Amino acid sequence: MGSGQWAVIAVRLPTAHCPLTTPLPVAYRIMNIAIIPAAGSGSRFGGQIPKQFVEIAGAPIIVHTLGKFDECNEIGAIIVALRSEEIERFEQTLKAHRIRKPVRLVQGGAERSDSILNALEAAKELQPEIVVVHDAVRPFVSTEQISAVIGRAREIGAAILALPATDTIKEVENGLIRRTIDRRRIWRAQTPQAFRYDLLLRANEEARADNLPSALMTDDASLVERLGEKVAVVEGLASNIKITTPEDLALAEKFL
Ligand code: CTP
Ligand code: MG
Image 1 (cartoon, rainbow, N blue to C red):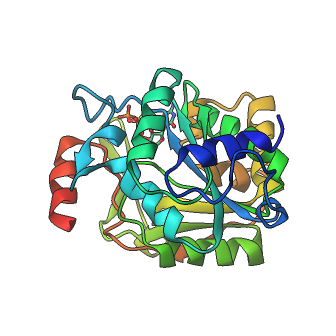
Image 2: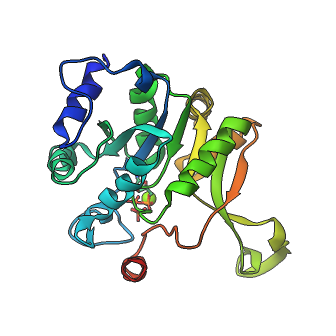
Image 3: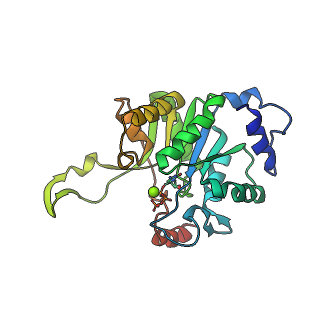
């Protein structure tokens, strides 16, 4: 796979600055990449089309999300993982909206972690310093939050956005409380999650080698944690919701 493939995708975009015939500028080879997993079916959301393609304020949710990474100065290129049957249509969607940075579309997998691994492999040729993973269905992230997790990941190796828990958390077994967990130590993980590229690739490869069940792979940071590596936490905002159910969509429309 040559760097030409990036240029091909870039030239499909209306305002791309990488023409088809020239190889990627050197500057693009030392950069940070956003990985946007968008190959889910949205089973909890329901509906005719996967939730990431549902329109809010005149554009699909995923386009709002991509716009944030397009605006963020620390990001050089974006990789989107999609179900194969949606790739062609999404190329049209990209054409219709103004995303300036090179975007590469890759095939997603059965589980979110499979989609991430495919995207990480596609990123290999660019040797990014940092990769930032962000759910396609969190369109309210800010460019400041993206920059903040990248900054901490450059210092520590890995960093995620998270929110301190506000509810009291109980550990429950067979309908009975076993204990109350000290809330001050509980944080709710969000995305973006940023990692040194080599660290996230190794974490994914080791999780696979160890046959880690997908139920334990819901977030990328957990794979790095199990290697015993540090992951920093950056306090996020409640507005960075993940659109999971139709109720979340109603909430999202209020944020706009
Ligand atoms: N995702 C993915 N590949 C998968 C599963 C999920 O790229 N095999 C993506 C989703 O498209 C979404 C993000 O991971 O952007 C977060 O996942 P989630 O909110 O769980 O979305 P879905 O898996 O689509 O929804 P559900 O779990 O309700 O089916
Ligand atoms: Mg899911």
